[in-house]
Image (cartoon, each protein chain N blue to C red):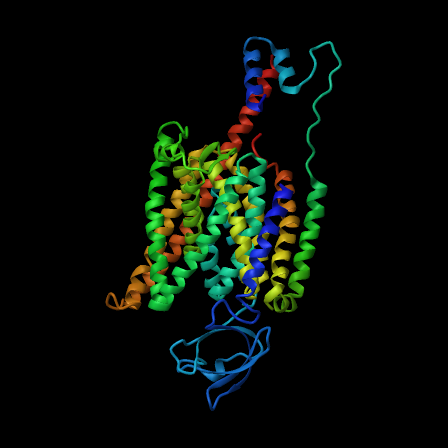
Length: 447
Length: 112
């Protein structure tokens, strides 16, 4: 396993170095985003002197009409979005402090989020990302820094989880690596689509697109997984390979690949679209596993245990590659990543242990429940985006606040219910196992 | 033979009145009358938990007492991507090992 990890890392290094030619130090992830410090403010001319990070190039930027000179903070690292429509190209659209001041309540919030996100990841192979990034943003972290820091937390967590589940005989390394390669390509496609929509329709359009993707995927896939889990629970819990997967496995299109742990022999061409869509979804809503895990179960024919374990390998590869990209841009707040890791590294192992005590369909129940409740959370944001795009009339402030509250609390409910189902299932499984061990030992002793 | 198979065989023998055989299957001891060597119970990794926990806590303290310098350095971009990624790897090994040992100390292990 250690050899394999080293091989993976050395294979990824050339990819990351070639990417470094695209993004030089000091630039943000796009040409309209600058990273650096404000060193002086000219209130009369409504301009600031900005020192770019890395290159230390000095530029003069203008404040937009909504900004006030006295709001500008000197000598703190900031992210500046430039107004693309301004003629000079040097007008600030918005400005965000890159690194939030760490307070005790933010620290505890990050530890709690990390614990639950880790538990979910260890159990269903994905999850946490859709809550960690928005959670960090709600603490005041700029979006780009939140995504970057989450990525840097994701790959170590996925590595530890994947290792544990490989030790339990659940993770198919070959399948994980094969899908990870196409997932990385899928991420690039997803990013291109996102950038196009952002350029054409602006921030509100981009948010609407993301929410629409969330809802379609979560409702359709989550609903299917839920109904499957329900049938399994009613039918005694014995998982069988689905009809679609059986048909896919019969397609004899070389190269055929055998995946030992997943117990599948299938054409490599079938794995490609699943990997691609996993990557595209990861680039869009940050959770590729909502396609990857059901794809491995229903299209390839892997069991829920193997699919959720193998997803962690894909998450590790994508997370590592993504972290290098964000690290090159200098956007990772290592404090956030490590505070999340403090509890998620324990949570992911606990979740992994939990999978050995529960029936296969419980994994599907947790996944489906999480997906369906998060769909409600995202759906509640859609009217606001439609109003921003003027596709519907502006919303009443009271209604908007209600929808924001519904979105937030649905997200909390998604995490809470998933955590509760996992913990209850684990307690039941561990108690039953200990009772049977004790009864067995007593039965033998009394002989 | 898996643990499940072993347990079921032991149950079958016990139900048939072959208690000594059942005991032997479970504990891998010789039959009565011969010297027996009881199976050694796996001890909990208290020392490893303490060691990895101490290293992990120390690393967190070092990071947060120097947070301004570290965030400045780790966000310079370019080849310095290696700093946050390398530190994340370091913490994942050390803190991951601490977590694994802690769960074992708490009696939370995978079903065998």
